[in-house]
Amino acid sequence: MDQTANQLQDQFQQRIDLEQKIEPRDWMPEKYRQTLIRQISQHAHSEIIGMLPEGNWITRAPSLKRKAILLAKVQDEAGHGLYLYSAAETLGISRDEMYEQLHSGKAKYSSIFNYPTLSWADMGAIGWLVDGAAILNQVPLCRTSFGPYARAMVRVCKEESFHQRQGFECLLQLSRGSEVQRQMCQDAINRWWWPSLMMFGPKDDESPNSKLSMQWKIKRFSNDELRQKFVDMIAEQIKLLNMVLPDPDLTWNEQTKHYDYGAINWEEFKQVIQGNGPCNKERLEARKKAWTNGDWVREAATVHAAKQAKRKSEAQTFSAKETQ
Ligand code: FAQ
Image (cartoon, rainbow, N blue to C red; front, side):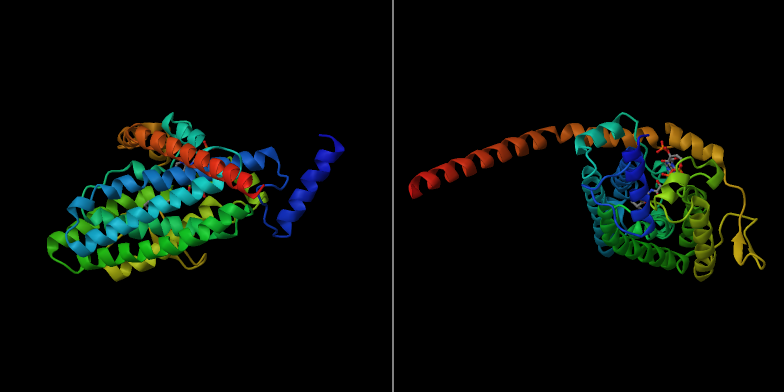
């Protein structure tokens, strides 16, 4: 690396250390740009694919109130995807390229959305556990070093925390209901608990991206630190539901002041992120179909925009002539 490149790298790291935000037009190492494109686009894909498991229950919500809440939540996730795609675009990648990476399987999305939603209680479990995990991971991202990502996350987090509360409230109702409702609630918790722990990513010593992401303050906490925070939070909240977490090894550790928990099935995680989870194929097919079906809309919008631009430029030429 020549001297100028070294100086640029040093200045860049100094700015990060001083907690200054990096903006799209600032100089940045190519690896920083690529890491952000990877993380932000995968985050955006997760929000969009994340609409599918819950969308599955919109027509079957048990009341008008629950249907309205679920519709609003799914719509919020679409909004999160759009802010995030926009933030990634500021790094020089187009939205079409990002979709292409998703559809070809090159880009990942969160493992959690490859599990099926089998009962209404899953809507509560997703809100409480999945959005709960998402918030713990995303609140620190409001302080991430890249300005557009940090700013997008502020609104996302406000909405996610509302989602989590509605999920908990949904499960609370079920937990106070009939025996069948209580069983549904416990069953949903049993199925979503371990996949939620996997959302935080591999163990720290097996997380190849963490070192640089922490140095560049893209990530503020490690995968294991956030996972532990989540376990500590949920192990307390579940007491209010009078339910149990499906982990016989979950115990309070007086020395560490944290909950110890059992072994995560990392082989399952690996399989899911390699495309072999229960719903991977179905999720990707649904996205690809939506893309193909949206072809005519994109074409019509492009033609409309070109017409508008032409009319605007003709009007400008006309008024310029008038004033001569
Ligand atoms: N699933 O080296 P690390 C939501 C990949 S949004 C799939 O530790 P990193 C809202 C990782 O990409 C949920 N892949 O990676 C909602 C990497 O592969 P690559 C999404 C995973 O980036 C709620 C490899 O493993 N949230 O839930 C997963 O430093 C309800 C090695 O991993 C975000 O995206 C996984 N769980 O740390 C919507 C938050 N974990 O790319 C609807 C932003 C790891 O090198 C309903 N992202 N991998 O091929 C992050 O904070 C980070 O990217 C981590 C992973 C923590 C996810």
